[in-house]
Amino acid sequence: MNAGKVLTLFLAMSGSLNVAFAIGIMARHAGASPAQAILTGVGAAGTTMAIFFTAVSAYH
Image 1: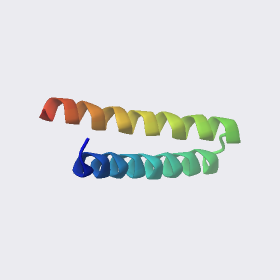
Image 2: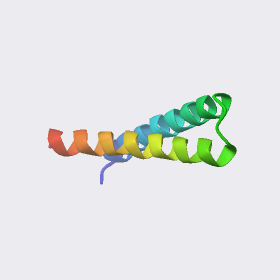
Image 3: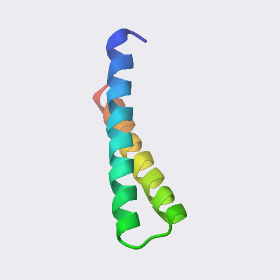
Image 4: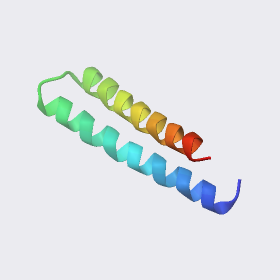
């Protein structure tokens, strides 16, 4: 992997983490328990990364 690919992966992970925190906080404020909010955030992060990897594989 070259530096560009590593930086792109870090950018995708950063965006995914931001989405996870935002969704987890929204779920918590909507009345979910802490465990449910964490699982919701992790699911959102996984979905975001899956979309990223799908886009990368379709691009290449």
